[in-house]
Image (cartoon, rainbow, N blue to C red; front, side, top):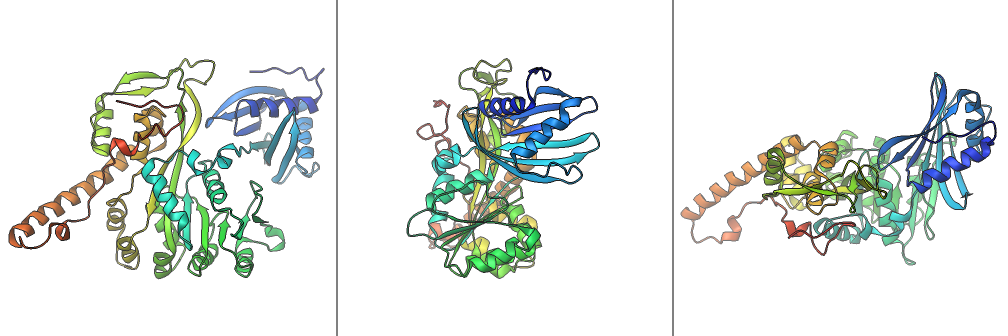
Amino acid sequence: MVAYDFTKVPVIKVVDDVIVQAAKMNASDIHFDPRENDLLVRFRVDGDLKDYTRVPKTFERNLITRIKLLSNMNITENRLPQDGAIKGVIGGLALDMRVSTLPTNEGEKCVIRILDYSRSLSGIEALGFNDTNFEKLKRMIEVPNGIILITGATGSGKSTTVYSILQRLNKPETNIITVEDPIEMNLEGLNQVQVNSEIGLDFATVLRSILRQDPNVILIGEIRDSETAKIAVRASITGHLVLSTIHTNNSLSTIERLLDMNVERYLLSTALTGIISQRLAKMLCPNCRVKVQTDAYQKKVFKTALGMDVDEVYTANEEGCDQCSHGYHGRIAIQEVLVLNDVIRDALNNENLDRDDLRKLVYKGDVITMLQDGLGKVLTGTTSFEEIYRIIDIDDDLEQIKEISIVQEDQTDNQEASQNVEKSKKEDALAPPQITIPSLDSFIVNNPYPGTVKTE
């Protein structure tokens, strides 16, 4: 904890120093939490909140007012939530931040989000996709029309992925128009529209106008309601490539959410190109990580999900070092990429298809689930098994893999019986769809993740 002497140091300098220190620590958010006796300042570093300092209650109002002034908020209004932005040079650092205030029973809570564009500007190659998923992503964005959805919870890196894709698509011959709330990153060459619901400029209204602006690529910041979903889908089937985000957990739940939004099945099956689902896991510090033996449960998970016997993996050194925090430094995305095929498109048109049958169709192809991708990154030493266990419901994912494997085995038995009766038929014509268990090579090729080592 850092202590400031507010009787000698002006509030202006305290606010600047807090922001600068948060940026230097690679914090994603700064929380100013009002308490009964003081104001607690916390930094979110690598996904975890860490206490930084406490501000005496007598200086709380002055500090929050200073932040409001920097972000162009109404300093006289403390009964309603407000949003603002801070962009400029503070303490020698060029920073872009989003600010939000919220009235609570103890006073106004304020959160500053520090926007980091370095990963987005580095391109899609820096997003941590394994080789199989990276090839799928490149195929998806090469399609001239259709809708690509990036899904995940708040703070799962969706915006970073979206802007990285836009960077790839941003060419002189392409007209890209975005509608966002708010605009998180200004990109040269893009036409970016800020939603303003107070004057009726919502997503649906802007989208109707965008279609008359001769776009090649459209970005919808977020699909929040049925009307936006329907317009987005219709835009994608009229010759436009549409990118958007939606708050769902995986590919299956994304399809179900769109159907719940009353998007017509025949339109969805035609328009949907692919789904990228992701979550963020903390990365192991390459300087102090330690290798440990896997226990019985971990062996079972690796065997079921990857078909591999794994005896040892890297884990975090809780004591940490001078380059990390308790053994972790930075975060990496754990992804699941689904490219729709003709089988899934036909199934979407079937109103009688239940959830279990749809899940088997989605995951029995070449989809690498988030669990499998996460375990692959455990094998490379990029993250730990404990992190994957924290962000993914492992047991639920394993049950899905087991169910699909059983279906595969039953189909294989039927195939062998058919071959005995009709030996003249070609073997490939009889082969049923197979579940793809990713090999180690699909995860570890040319050491694809930062801070990793090759395994023998």
